[in-house]
Image (tube, rainbow, N blue to C red; front, top):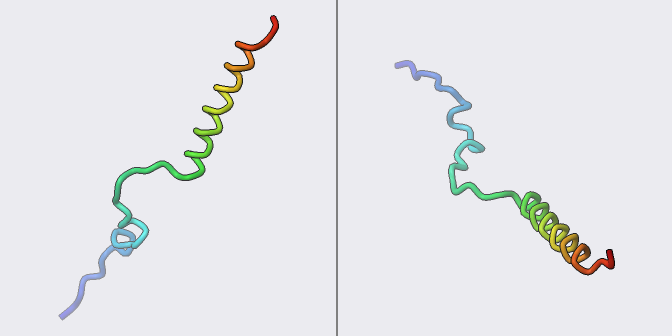
Length: 50
């Protein structure tokens, strides 16, 4: 009896990570950094003497 060779890519462990889509830690840090920069720019512009 012959066993059919299946596609190894279809059963790769890396492809089994089908879970909730969550942003990476680096993208979360970048988003926080962007918000801090926006808040500081807003604060500086509201407190400038122009």
